[in-house]
Each structure stands twice: as structure tokens, then as C-alpha cells.
Image 1: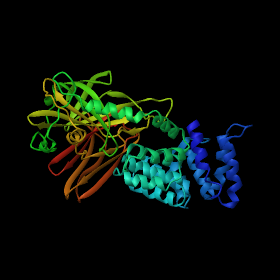
Image 2: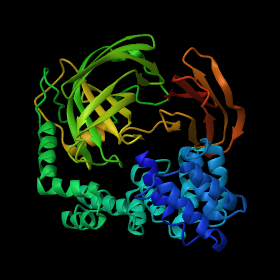
Image 3: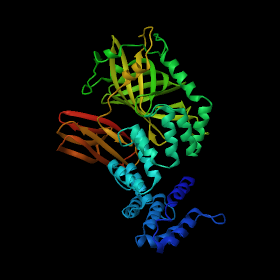
Image 4: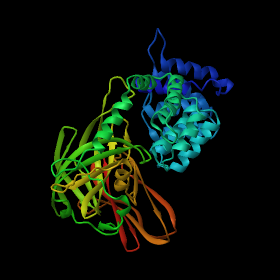
Length: 490
């Protein structure tokens, strides 16, 4: 409830100057009922009742207030579709906060299908009309590649035109960690100071305590570990020979699950959002036992062991109940110093370098703490018994762990209501798009039974509100090729 009140407080702050004169007093009275006073608690039912008259007359601010109340079920039954309808009517009149919320709705599929092009359109309009949070939101999307191509420079440009406090915070992070700009601690401190948020206060404490220097030392120690048959060290190899010999390197070739069998040791590497900077390195021990498409796994990392089963599909492992709890040295909350990552899948590739086989895994992760997918993570593993006295450099480690993205893009995954399914064709092709449950039965939606599609990007929205929780398979047939990905319904 506190989050809803905060949302309303931020949302209502821009209403007074926009309301039509004849509804200004009505909206002010509604705000009083919504937020309460020192002498009276909030009364959402009264607030909705008095603002609805002006909303019915088409007043933009009243429509926007009604939309937010409908969205959160405050004083009226929760209804995302009506919330979208009210806010869209306000947005079409140029109401900045409504435009911002419509952009957010398109981004996450609230009351509408997910559509990132429309999300960017409405957020840009809102920013042009003075909504500072809209510019910050676009920057955040580009920072982490949420529905748009990841791009630090675009993220920074949007943060720079926003006065929203968290925009300043993330500008500080960009200069502190070197996201798209040279690292500059002085500039980071300047932006953290301008932010005036608890998040930035925590980062200033980290700077004072030399946390980053300690983290960098830990990373270097992991990278310099000498490889032996017993430890998790990874040997230094000639990166320019990576492409000479590979086992099943072509993504069109199907790997067999039995290739995974055995014990593996190596490193888990967490990268920044661009996939170009190492942020964390941890030793990892794993063990796999495969029978057809079912793989029993054991995963030991950060003093925690997980054991369960995974599904093998299209050269990828889809895990059941695999969580990793990491220390979070750069936490921006004083009460949180760890982060829990759920590992959803690992796209697998084997690479043979100088007669040594490495198992490379591109992890897809998710955290409920942010309600977001995680940054790029890779595992680089050797089978137990292989080793030589040498170490792997930063650049070589990044090069070995480099992987192609999935052909099928799913967002969000896992999902609750709707999910955005996208892919890009490099040439014209006959395409089909279907979703199945794990028993092979199609779900009640055929997205594309078969059509000739042009080169370029294509996308669909799967309405999954009626689907049961569990795993589903998305299959995109392109000519004679079939691409698959596992989709997880929460």
C-alpha cells in the first residue's frame, strides 16, 4: 500500500497545472481524499466518486486519476483494461503523466499487448511534454536492453536530459563503473550527490569504503588461478585459434544431451549489461547425468549446492529450481547485501581450443528483487581431469564466453499475463509460430499457422492469462529449420 501511495503522490504532483479550470477544485479535493491529511486517513471511495464526474466530461487530469485508481483498485474494482482506456483518453489530450503511464503499459503489457515501439513513442512524447520520469525510463530501457537494443550512450543521453533523481543516480553508476564512458570517480560522486536519494547515499558509502577496489582484487584473483585437474581454474589459450576446432559449433546443428554427462569445473562470469566488462567471477562445480531430454544436474557455487532436473531442448538446458545467491557489494539499499538469481536456462556450446574441450553456457537469469532479467552471465567449464599450468586473461575469458543471442526473443520470461515473442529474418522465408506445452500439445493459440514473411523483425503477443503455471515451448519454423525456446509461466 505504501508503494501505491508513493505512486499516487508522484503521479498527482503534475496534475494541478494541467487540470481544466472547472475541474481544478474537484481534482484538488480528490487528491486530499487520495493522500489523506494529518487529521484524516485516505478515503479512496470518495476520491473516485468525486473525480468521476469530471472524468466523464473528458477532463484529462480527472481521466488520469481515474485510470491510476482503476489500475490499483483504489476505491473501485481493479480493471487494467479500463485503466488503459482512461489513461489513453488523457494521453491523447497531451497529459504528460498519462503519456508516461501509457508508455509503461505498452512496455509491460498492462491493459494492452506489449509493444516496445509504442512504449518508446509515448515515453518520448511524455518527456517532450515535461515528464522527467519518462526520460529516465527510456534511459533505463537502453541501459539494460529491456525491449530495445542495449546501448549505454543512448541511456546516458536520456539520463542527462532528465531531472528525475534516479536519472542522476544512474549517471553516477555509469561513471563509477565505466558504463559507456571512461571511469571517473569524481563525476560519479558529483552525480550521486545531486541525486539526493538513499540509493546514491549507499554508493557514496561504497566509494568511501573502497568496495570497488576489493571487488576488483577478488576478480583478478579468480582470473589468475592456475589450472589443475582438481581445481576450478581455466587455462590460458590462444584466442585467435578459437574458430579452428569446435565441437558442433554451428547453431543449426543439434547437440546431444549425453555430451553433458560427467563432472565439470570452471568459472561463472557475470558481465555488465553490454557484455563487455567482467563484474564478478566465481568458481563453479557442476555435474550432469542425461537420459534423452531429461538431465539431472548438481550445481555448486558460492558455498551452495542445488540438485534437481533440467529439460534439454534446442541445445539449451531449462532448469527447475536453480537459484544462486550472490553477495551484492554495490547494493543501493542498506538492508540488502545479497541478490538471488533464478537461473532459467543455459544455451550450451562446446569449444575445442588446442585440443581441450570447454563447455560454454550462456545463462538467462531473473530476479524477483528487481522483477527483471539479469545481466549477461556465462559459465566456462572444463571436464574434470583436464588441465595445464596456465591462466586465462580478462580479454581471453570474454572472447571464449562470447555467444550468439537466441533466435527467438521472449519478454518477459518468466511471465504472468502476456509475453512478447519476437525474431528477425535475414531473408524472406515461410514461417510458422506455435506454442506447445511440455507434452507436445498446442496451447489454445496458434500465433502464425504458416505465411511467407519478409526479411526483418517480426513479433507477436501471446495472451497467457489463462495458461497454467509451468513451462511451454515456443517453436518458430523458418523454411526447413526449427527454432525453439522454453517459456515459463509464473
